Length: 273
Image (cartoon, rainbow, N blue to C red):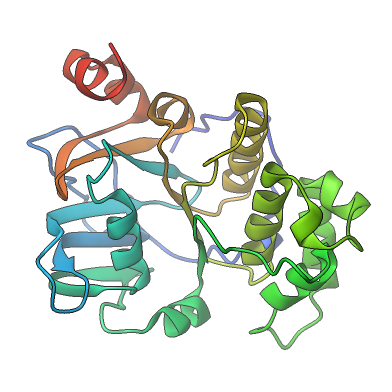
C-alpha cells in the first residue's frame, strides 16, 4: 500500500499491536466491498442485525480496514453508521454475516473479549472518566496489561502534548477537543491492533476538528488500522484510504476517499454538491 501521508506522523509501531495479514483494496462496485484472497485485517462482512429483539437496522452491510489505513463510514443521519461500528465491536447481535479480526472469526465474542483480542473502541459520548485526572484516565486504559506501560504513556503524551501539560488536571475540566484526545489516548494505552472511533469530531470547532484529524493520521502512520464513523463526511474522506457510504443500513457506495469525493452522485447526495 502506498503511503498517503508522506512524512507526517511517526513510524514507531510499538504504540500498537499490528501483527496481522490481509491485502484487501477497496473498489466501487455495486455498493459492496470486495476483498482479495486472505481477507482484510478487520472486516464486518454481510452484516445483518439490530438491537435486542428489534428490527434489523443493518442489511448485508460490509465494512473493512487494513493495517495502516483509515477507513471512514459516512452517510445521512439514521443511515446506520454508528450501528455498523457497534456491530463490529459486538454491541449488537449480528444475525447474519460475520466479523473477523486478523483472520479470526470473533462474531460471537463479547465487547470485553474483543478488547482483549486487540480492538480499541472510542464511543461518541461518555468516553472519559470526568472526575479522574488525565493521567488516571490513561492508566485506566492499561487495565488489561500486565507489563510496564510507561513507554506507551510517553508515546501518548508525544502524540497529544496538551495532555502531558494537563496530566494532573481533572479530565472533566478539559475542552471538548482535549477530552477526545484523552479518550483516544486511553484506547491507545491498550496497544490495540485496530482503533475504532465513533464521531471523534462531534461538537468541536473546525480548527479542533482539523487538529484531531492530524492526530488520527499520525496514529494510522504508526501502522494501526483506524475505522471511523464521521458526520463531517467531506473532511473525513479527504484523509481516508477507503470510505463507505451507508444509506438505511446498506452499502450505497464504496471506494477510496478520493474516488468518493470525485463521484458526482456522492457529492450531490451526501457532500452538498
